[in-house]
Image (cartoon, rainbow over all chains, first blue to last red; front, side, top):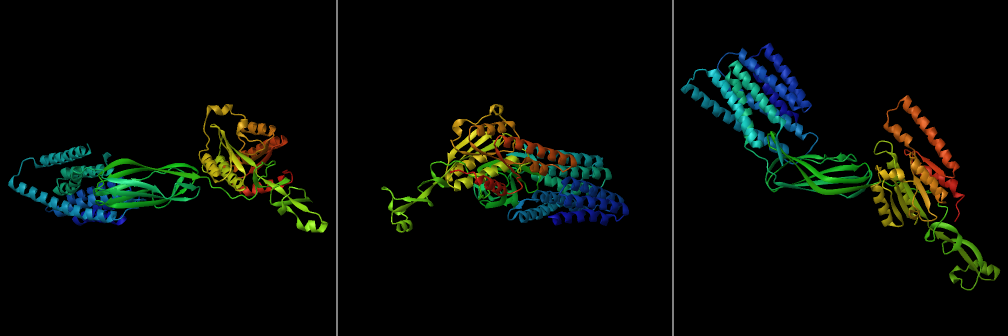
Length: 166
Length: 424
């Protein structure tokens, strides 16, 4: 079960190097890869999360060092890779030392394929809507709006999760 | 069903928050876009709710086993609705060890599907084992949310002590009136030819010894030795045990008791059991297969149990012991109460043999070896030898048995020495 988890690691570490192939990005990328590999090997989700945090840092540094227009397609793929890394690692951990029924892995892989397709499509639709909205209206204090929007998104997710739990 | 968010959900939220923070501070929209799939994943979870639409049934290949035997546990899962990911876990008591398969299973079921999950356990120690409590965890596909419940499908397994085949047994000094395997010195009905005497009216024709009759020209008949059985009482010391399970002195004593019971019952003797401990219990002497089952059942529940009565238990009641019974006391001789009881039995004229499984090798096995431990064990061995000698002076016979060695070897030496003194 390590292969499905290893593929997203390659994407997460490799893509920022394509954006900005510098020594600093490489160093953080290697550290992220080591942590992710360790987490996959010992079936530890927290270690993989630490690797994911470093990978996001690597991506942020690469974006900060690079110039040019936003590369949103790559960003969507990076996000999907990050989510898949977490889910595959956790799935492998749950299946460890367990008797696996017929069709468990196949149905999970089918689910991930469907999810990647849907999430990618939804992300591109949202990007399209945001691009159109930014062309129509250019509000002042855009960074403040972005920060507030991010906070609202997190709070909305937290409320939705809490409601589902109750 | 108790539902909860899993640690994975917290991990996703952490990464999403970290991505948003980096996005805001770096001013790059890509990081916010990269976080979008994570948030979508969390929202996808928020709309689902796990529902229990499945049933399980639990079965064992056998409901009775002996120590060391293997039992196949089968759990059948039926789904009435599609089940994305169901994790089942059956906790096992320490006396059972999984040898094939796993006691944790993960399944995906479609509507109406039935899945069977099997694993094999090895019974390590005697006792009644309750199986059938299955912990179920229903995961969503992403693993962000789980519902937990516990299901009870009754299943009880009885693990009996493994009897060791014994060929040589302590012979009883006295026999009973019923027919058995012991050749008595008194003549009567039997198979073993004894003396020849002259025919008297009333003798049966088939007992006429024709060879002697022709020789002496008078009728002679052959007399036969009677074949008797004996009453054997196994007195088990459950006052104290030492050693680490499943190799305690009580485990060794119970295995010896089961072996002796089986061997004596095979010789048509009547066997009874006294559990001398906190709960003072006994099984009246009897013979046959049913009696063996009764004895095994009693041995199954034999354990060292603390009791306030224990301090007052000193002597075995008269009605528990049949007259002229052979009493085999099985004890590590660690408690003075038991010694007092066996001395009392010997004083009351019972034919008494003490089989003492030595606690020293069992303690050595469960303790890390060191010079001080070795010295303590040697001193302990000397103390036990002195105590055995003291009991021997009182007329008691003690068989010191190292549980690592076969019981047959210990009994063999004893039967040879007692064989000469057996009277019919």
